[in-house]
Image (cartoon, rainbow, N blue to C red; front, side, top):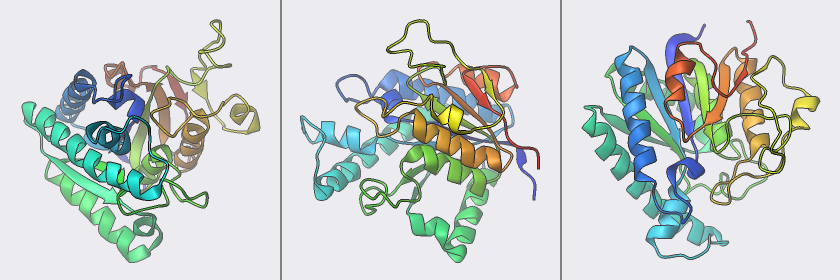
Length: 266
């Protein structure tokens, strides 16, 4: 079966949703809700994969540093997920949009019956005009937080899995930098943005550094892994700066923004 040409998955990370002190960035969340609502009004089906639960929960619980124990991370995730969904519901409601929450575990994708049920849920929400908001179920799942043998790794890979599952035409990963550069722009001011990559190989991976923002878990390497998974199924994947949500308009219209990883022809 082919891809749904009007279906897009947008992934937003902790670094976009929170400010430098770890609190929710309300302006960023409002801008994201406004743009995605407008994109839906243009005739697109939108799925949002959102991080941020642990970081927001840590702040709300008064934790000065990110917890190291599993039980404290999961407690923070439980509190933070409530806060994030409350804010999403508020902001999307301002633009007359309905959201639905989907929390996933690895077995939801690995077991065929659960995967079919999940696909049906996504399709039903989209058919009714709702915007599904997806996160891994951090409060009960240890795989996303700790395990090295994990399916998702973090929400970059989760967004690619969701894009493949839902047969989206585009995956847009909102990052804390403008895209993939030929060297780290935070260390090298003359680094140049790579606008298009047709094949992800070892030379591309060699450009990627370590983890990105201290509030998130994913660096450029995990984004490349997500792009490799999605493009293998023909899904165009774009990495762009999450602080400039207006760029999503250009992306859905086929114009350049960030780095495009071209989906393979199938």
